[in-house]
Image 1 (cartoon, rainbow, N blue to C red):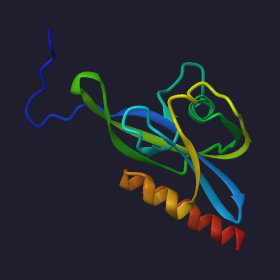
Image 2 (cartoon, one colour; image 1 turned 120 degrees about the vertical axis):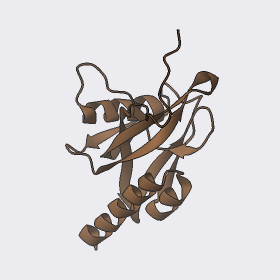
Image 3 (cartoon, rainbow, N blue to C red; image 1 turned 45 degrees about the horizontal axis):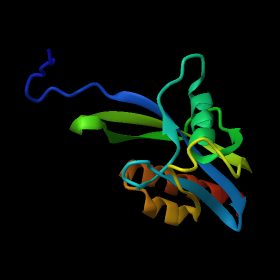
Length: 151
């Protein structure tokens, strides 16, 4: 039997963890990947994993979804909320805590390589490429802080 919600009742927000892959070159570059279904530009993210800390989950998702590994920050730089679309039109809100990951290894083959594309962007282009306003803001703030430390 389907569980009914009262009008105006908000569904519980679900938690996810993401990596914000970056590298230092001629300025800060951010790696984005395409989502499997809609092919939108996103960051690697996933559901909590039993026995893993949030940053460990973010690092694992980066390996599975983008074939990258490196040094992941101990603390999230912020979070964003998006609507996860599921099978059959079901959807629910998700809060995603974002952990910077300085990429040190890019593998030629990885688990989801046939389902996704990965690409490096300068941080301003990366912010423009993502759809979620709060993720845009996180990327821009990270880039500005990087420029201040680097310059």
